[in-house]
Image (tube, rainbow, N blue to C red):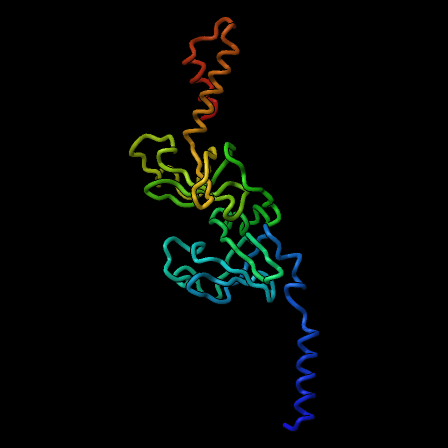
Length: 238
């Protein structure tokens, strides 16, 4: 190729690059934090899987999102797999997306059409909040749950066996299978920011309210014993 042809070839190449649409600009409104997508895994590395959430736009699903104690992301995902993800962080300037994988319960709701991606607008709840959770996984030491209506990492929680308010020896796998809905109270966070919840604390709150109700009504006639009132109040919740 002579000098003139080479220069013309380079100019054409640069011009084509200049007019090619940047997918991050084309899909900028879609790839925002809190958005939900059913994406396709395009490649897998040791540290995680890359998921295409819009044409030409990929995000990283960390290996910890693909399963417990995985040595390599390929042990929990493969190229071509489709997966529901939530955009946790979006850095458009650096062209980076951080993703989290949706829980099985959330996926079931989305794929059945019961809920749409736009329906999930919940923010991370605060400590002390009482709410409904869905059992995601049961281990020998406690239950991993997802707060109903809150997707991704900010909606994940854990209820230790000691906070389940069940009798010692209860088979939690049998009594609370995956998908079970429970009422629980947020009592703290772990060192990784995960929510710690308790059913026992929720029942204690119910008992305190029953005591307060009794004191307010204690001056009335024919009230019965405090034990009667307490059992009646808690029975209404059961």
